[in-house]
Amino acid sequence: MEIKFKLGVITDEVTQDIFEAARFCKKHGLQCMEVRSVNGRSPFDYTDEDVEQIIAAAKEYDLEISAISSPVFKCEYDDQEAIKANIAGFEKCAIMANKMGAKYIRGFDFWNKDVPVEVRATMYGDIIALCEKYDVYCALESDPAIHSSTPHKLAELLTAINNPRIKALFDPGNEIWVTSKTSEDAYDKLKPCGIVNMHVKDAIPNGTPYPPAVMPGTGVADFVGIFKKLIRDGYSGGVMLETHYRKNSELDEEQLKRPGGAAFSDGAYEASEESIIALKEIINKALEEISL
Image 1 (cartoon, one colour):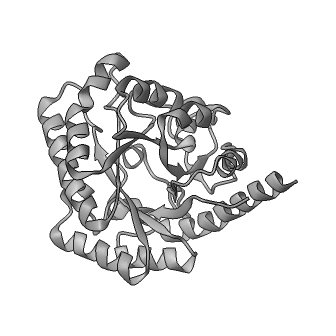
Image 2 (spheres, one colour):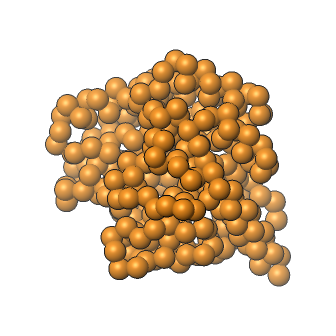
């Protein structure tokens, strides 16, 4: 069967140097990049020079900028100043996305304070308006530290929001930090919500809240099964390596909650190189099992 999705990497899972990240993509035959921290700066803090470098690197190595991995709404639900700043940050990302040719901006569902999903769903009005203004989409991701901590909970939020400008980012690996596994029906639950992007990471539960990540295929995530579904369904969005695995160090809890910066990227290149090779092997295995 034909693979329709685009394979790429989140840039700071390789390096803070966008040109080095682009060379990594070219070396491994990847089609796109999702930009997060570049030159030590979050998307909310990108300078004009950062944006120019991202565009230049993508052009030089013939890569698509698939998404801006913003931290929007990784904040307290009831912190009005933080919400105002996040909305302003999202608008900045939308303007930059237009310049980069990106259509998707990653977003979240607030730090977990046990607020009803129907209430949280009303918080995205300004984001929807900005998406319409700049013709972009917000792809919400499940994360262990937020209300939508699993794909199932994210599906509940997206159903409650029920707007075509708010899409799903499928990260099955993140669920390991919540339930110690990847649910067999997670993809099926999110699929009706419109999956436009996917992140790939893996881990082995060890009884701690934040076990260290491992190379994809060596943890508990059933990526072969997941990719069989993606391929059979003709999924055409992005598949981004976001390994969180490091060769000679481990990311701490704060780095996992707020990825980015030089310390986050320390030792990332070698680990991501191992991981992208492993990810391709997983995809090939999925293809082989489909053809049997």
